[in-house]
Image (cartoon, rainbow, N blue to C red; front, side, top):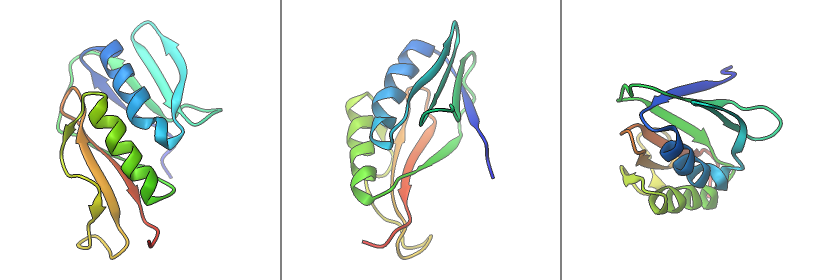
Length: 120
C-alpha cells in the first residue's frame, strides 16, 4: 500500500493553485505548507507532496475517485485551472470494463488522472 507520493514542480505557487482546484472534487486540500513544499490530502494526513525544483516529466499519478461524477468534476476543475487535456472522461475498456478515467497534463507536463473503478 502506498502511503504518500510527490512531484518536483518548477513553480510551487502555480502548482499549488492548479492542484488545489483540480483535486478539490476528490476532497483534497492543502494540509501542510512550507517555503517550497506543499502537502495535500484528505484530512488529517497529506499523501501528495510537491517540492519546488527541476521538474522531471513524464510521470503519471492516478487519484481514486468515488464516482464517475467525481472524475468528471476533476477533469472540469483541472482544465479550468490551466491543465491541458490528455484524455477526457470516459471508459477505458482495455484496462477493464468499468474503468472510468480522465487525464490532464499539469503545468509541468505531468500526466494526472482521476479514476473510478465502479460500474455505472
